[in-house]
Every structure is written in structure tokens, then in C-alpha cells.
Image (cartoon, rainbow, N blue to C red; front, side):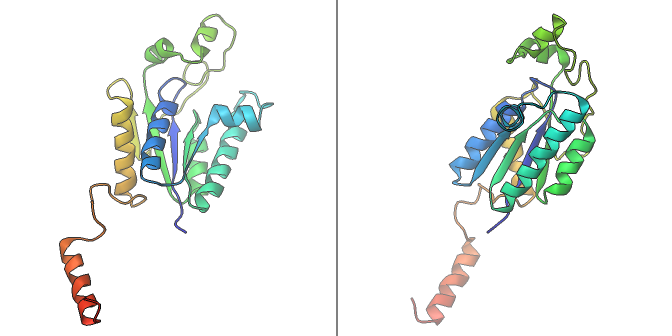
Length: 201
């Protein structure tokens, strides 16, 4: 069984991580490939509801996500992880855990993220209800060695997903979608000659 890839989407809240991960999930499923989407918020809610948002809690949550990604990919699933994972250490640790690892840095300005604010986090921050938003109240370390960098103010989610899929193909983690048949013309000719020599044609 071929090992799956772990695609780790990092970025500040509302940068577009989950949206792009969902688009990549659709593309992988369309190819008939096994895929698991580990959204950090959903995993936290269902498996670690008592974890807060301190530095220690964020560290523990990203460690659990990396471990789950490693286990699932070991058995052939392509794993999508959308997690702020604000420190490079979080992503580097996940890379160490997962042999086929792709870091996708999802970028958008603080102003744009505040305007999007799908979960109301920034609105709560503006009201002084919370003060633990990465990239605003708390540090967020930009990616230094990510395989893909996506600015969601410049391209659409579909275009972003296409970039991720292209990188997976480039790295050899996915077969190229440009190849409509499993063999080239020369390879097909060699197979035909071999079969004919064996008396099957």
C-alpha cells in the first residue's frame, strides 16, 4: 500500500486554509483517492474540547494533529490539515513525523482577515472579549520552507487548490492528471510486442 501525503495548511485565522483544503479534498476524491480532512477546529472540538488557546495548548493540539496525520497517511490516506500552527516549530515537527509532507502557507493581510471573519473571532477581539488571535495578539511565524505559498487576496480558492495539486504531482505524491493513459505510445508498442512474442496477440 502506497503511503499517503500530509498536506498542512498554515496561516492566520480567516486566511483561507479550510476553504482551500476543502477544494483539494474535492479534487483528490474526484480521482478516487482516499482522503481525510483534519480541520483543527473540528478536531479540537471533538477530541480535545478542554484545550484552550495558550501557547502550551496550541503546541499540544498541533502535535496531536501531526500524529494523527502520520498514522492515517501510513495506511494510504492523503491527509489535509488546516491549522493556524503559528510557530515554525509546530510545522517542522509535523514534517519530521510525516515522510510525505507538504506545507502550504496561506497568506492574507490582517485587514482582509478581519473583513472576512467567518467565525467572528476578529469581532470578538475588537470588543476585547479575546486577546489570543495569532497574527494579531499573539505571534505568527511566516513560513520559511513551505512547498506552496498562496496569497488568497490574489487568487481564487480553485486556483489555489490547483497549485497544491500541481505541487503534489511535482513531488511524485500523485500521478499526473495530464496523462490520459497509463503508458506512452512507445511503452504501449513495447507491451504489444512483448505480448505478441509470448503468443497472446
